[in-house]
Image (cartoon, rainbow, N blue to C red; front, side, top):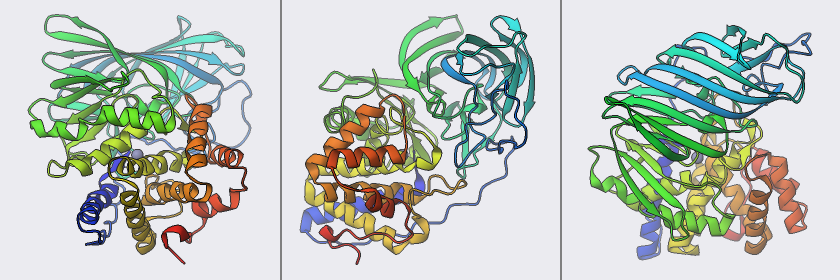
Length: 506
Ligand SMILES: [Zn+2]
């Protein structure tokens, strides 16, 4: 994820970096970020309802996974294995849907009921293993009671049929609309962290990854850009069905279905990773320029972190201004306000950020939303690595200094990255101070150990989840050093630690 507030720094930085490269001195200082607008009121119930305390029915799956920031996110008692989303959009202008979500899951305990996270729509029926099931809804919690209890270890299939337009989903974690968003001429999906429930019933926490099939039918001339590989397009006369398969495990918040009139661009990285980009028709040709080096980025980051985790990559650029870009798995999406046509190199950093998230965020996902710096700090630092790759170590040092100075000057916008507040998950601290944490670690252990530990961390948790403790353990194991105090200082202490090697701080 990247939003307008954090991007200010990067365009500001590029001016500085280019000035440094040109005349070897700093010509400006980054501007102060503007405070974020207050959270708007929700028109549907957002997630985050605390898990009720009191006696717990041992045969009911829990209504949350105990996340430290959002205890109500996700559900217990089962493991989601595969989702199939059959969605027919009957009216693109309103996103009116006729939908069937089929979930294949495996019980991790005996269940006479279990929960899914789901908001809005009219549910017309639910079956479990082909038999009609009872259900009940409270907030985002959809409680399903199958006709027959499910035993530990049983595989079971849940089919939920529903219809209507998605509601306006206001996240509890950030001040803008998430989930399925309808705009003039189409719709997009940006779900981090809690928007998935706005368009399909799921176990909505990154701890429960699954594979996905998307079968999305839209009227002509609209097209669909979703996660994974487009396996089939079926023509029905005045409508078409687009079938996408995401065969790697994916967190629910990264599932995306985007509908628009689209121009497609395909290419391959030198190492053979297929890339398909989608652009809203009518966007200027220049919009493609910042995406031209994605193949080089995939190969470069593959060399630094380890092999690219998925079978395809690409970007979707939508002709609207939604104030963010998001690293949906294999299909990052960008609003036009994240693209500066006058600054291709600056926009390339946003492109590199979302692309690097495919390793850190998408493949290695957080075990708890409180560990979000493991996503954003890594993606932020990847921008620095890309700068180093194209412009050398001095340019990286200048970038580190500009980030450090910004954090030091405006501490109120950059709280310690290890403790994000639940209502401002994507604060500047998880980005800039998270990225600085990695650079400080690199200087502490040396380049060789640092890159070896990044590769080990990725290889160990690829396709799964990791916590801050897991990362610290890998860092200590690979360096042979005690790093807990050092990293905890960077992650949790109010005071920004110094970087003596760059003469930063006291
Ligand atoms: Zn990000």
